[in-house]
Amino acid sequence: MPQIIHGKNLARAGIVLALILLAGCVPSSVPGPAYPQSTYAPPANNGPSGNYNQQGVSPAANNPAATAYSAPATVTTRYVDPNVMPASATGLVPPGPGAGAGPGSLPAPTVSPYDVPASPPGPPPGYTGSASATSRVVEPESTKKSDDDDKEWDISHLAPDYTWNKFKAALGWGPDEHLAKDAYDKGQALFREKKYDEAAKEFCTATWRWPDSTLEEDSMFLMGEAYFFSDQYGSAQDSYANLLKAHDNTRYLDTVGARLFAIGTYWEQLDMKTHHWPLTPNVSDKTQPIFDTIGNALACYTLVWVHDPTGPLADAALFRVGNIHFRRSEWEEAAAHYDLLRKNHPKSKYQKAAHLLELQAKLNMYQGPLFSVVPLNNAHEIAEQTLRQFPGQLGDEEQRVRQTLVVMNEQFAEREWAVAQYYDHKAEYRAAREYYKTLLEKYPRTAFAQRAQARMEEIKNEPDEPPNHFKWLTDVFGKGR
Image (cartoon, rainbow, N blue to C red):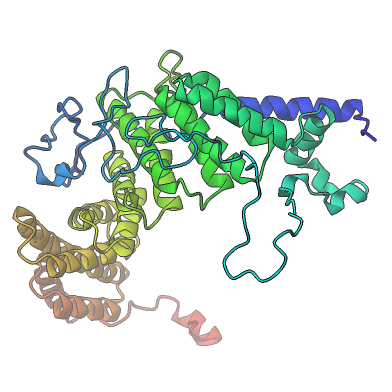
């Protein structure tokens, strides 16, 4: 017996639906300033024709560090080209659904993978039971009757998903395997005809008509492919992200990672060519997101290394995220991603560049002798490790790293000098002399050591503690600690 939907539930469902549709049209925003220049500049994203060089950054041909960072995309009306694809992106369209639809793909299947064979297959090898056993139908999770259906109202019924599922079921939009398969087959046919917009709509129908199933996984992937090959990269990004969220171990992971990496590269190049503030809307170019092009490029790279941390593009994605933050002077974020790359991908070709760039980021995080010493300690450790790990491989950078170690030694001495000065100004000369002595022992070759030596001579006859002007009071109550 169908359920009766009350007016309040309908209103609530309408509001939820409007919010869902609105949220799907607005990508996330990551505000940031214009790119400054830096001493240790990360390699630029140089396009095939060198049109995307950031001002002051040499092209890939003259910058060995930028060779691995060269972009595989072109800025043309048609982005997808059989000869222009991300590095390591082989087998871009795997066998199965969608094969034969795009560049470099396999021949199209003649039979849908969801067609029921005319005769049932034979028993598996080694099977000793009856071969005519009745087949068992396994329903997806979304169609199984849950315990909530037998209960009265509880707090979980306020969830948007619960309201939306009830709303769809009441309107006849609930799970239906046959309708899902029909939509999938129509999408396949349209996809082969390169009618990508129409195919994407059919695949979308198939995803919500039979959720939590292999058909849903295939439909979500092909919906992303349809948007990708029709140059609607914002919609493609959303489709791939939804696929990874619903099926994090999807068999299309390699292809999805390559697609997202290519989209992120394209958007990063566009932002480096013409940077816009994140809230500047895009209403004419379907190849870009509506808001925040560089923020969505970061999101694409993040999806790659988060969902496939050991994949062929994980280290490159981490490196690019770090470089974007570095160019925006977001030192903590940059250092965190370089650190992940150094520790999780020890064999990456970006190791040397990650060491040098994280060193610079850590030095920029250090704010002086009166603030935390942690960034300075980390920078010192990275500098020493860089010299040990890349002997004879740093070129001109080796001398710069050694000079940086000398500068950091002066900064450590400055911290000891600041503490000694604190006690010196309070006339607590015993404590001041101890810190001056420590400075001389630990950093004897620094400029602050000479100043400490001179100051110790000046206060050598001073009393250990300042005079007690309230002796009459301390005699009564005693000296406090």
